[in-house]
Length: 110
Length: 113
Image (cartoon, rainbow over all chains, first blue to last red; front, side, top):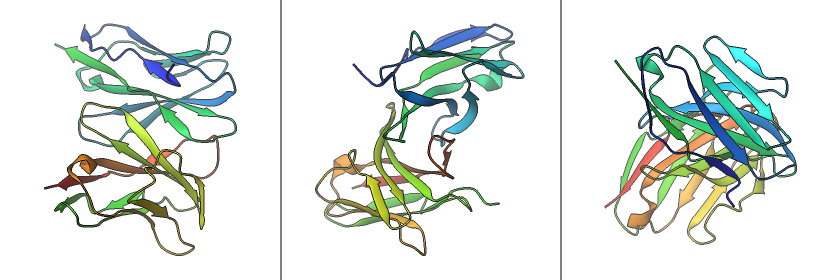
């Protein structure tokens, strides 16, 4: 089982739609969680950290479910500029290495 | 506060040559990570370094690849005797500590011809 798993998509949605991605992780000792965004042929950029209580940043909401070992990202009112690959990142206690999922591709169309 | 700086952005090497990739972390960051990304694939961890120490190199091939992060100067990822399969984007990230956000450089795109 991979350490961090994501549905690769693509998720193809119209502008204004709400879309949600999940990511599962295998190591129950994982301590820190993040979502990154990567545009084609660019470096990954931090989108937001994920806290146990859930957190929101504008149109983006991230949640963590430790019992089921998954994190989620919800994007409301999708914009064309949201089209990108969204990467789930987990850091496990002990290794301290950010481990990336393969990413979920989002395409927002007019 | 400049971000993570990687150079060169693009590097072309012939098979058998050496490739040197440099990474200067963000100011105040002492943790450096190197990743490799093939087209249409995810980021694969290679090596984790702190100043003058390799913390974890479990993702780095045992042969031809080496990394360092000296007391002064940038972190270097060195690939000796490159082969076509080494062609990829190599990203460096830095963080101020463990369990914190990591910030990426723009990457070095290595092409082996």
